Length: 365
Image (cartoon, rainbow, N blue to C red; front, side, top):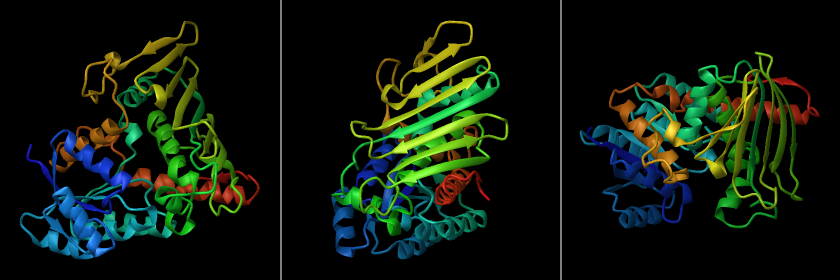
């Protein structure tokens, strides 16, 4: 398959998530990075492009979208790896130019920005992809298959958690600074990691909660965004759930987990032991499932050779390249516009519920 010509917006020198996306795109040789608008500072953008060996550097994304769309050898897709408030404008510009968009999560910082992306995506010939990388890990995809096969029976209980402790004190450093700024992040822990937990539960179960009741907190004095959230969930199927996300849980590094309980069996997955699933039948002993049982063919090394964060991103990039080249076999497992809009609806509903002292509100209303 001919490599996809890729561009990047944001992700200049020293940017964490930009480097992650570049590594992921390189891992399977499915992309070649041809152009970038790597910083809002033109000098830094040029220096970053030279450092990374990117042939074409632009001072701003609008000029990049116009110029690349006009070239016969222009980019076919662009990765947007900016802070949340800078997702919408470049996404709209490239979608209007007919260039596929690969955007880091969450979709945007505000509902209005999300609506702009949605409108551009629905009228574009190009496609929009959202990089919820944890849903691309092999055992998460295996968990999804087990649920779809009815192994758990009728789903009764869903518990998702994402716990970190790195913001337990007042924010310091670039990564903390923009994530605790409501103008740039939109929401705090809810948007940064809560959308991951929401999407993970939705992806594996195939169900979206209909109503929620939320208690959002800003536990660090003076912090203008939430840093802890406890949310109760109600599903149209009758299932009940809970979602706890925190960035002030001291001692927790990256504690993403999902537990499902059905009428026939229970299923448990934890990111810190991501190579394993624990399946517990109602009338039998717990079973440990590893990648030796994985049917998704998402793994790239033999079972027992650990894979993780980077490989999840790489799985998504490889699936996206196949979709761009016309192979739609796996498009249902790559998050897109609907996943992004669902995450934004989740944030809005949780904020509304918390403002109303935990009142039950409809998701998406």
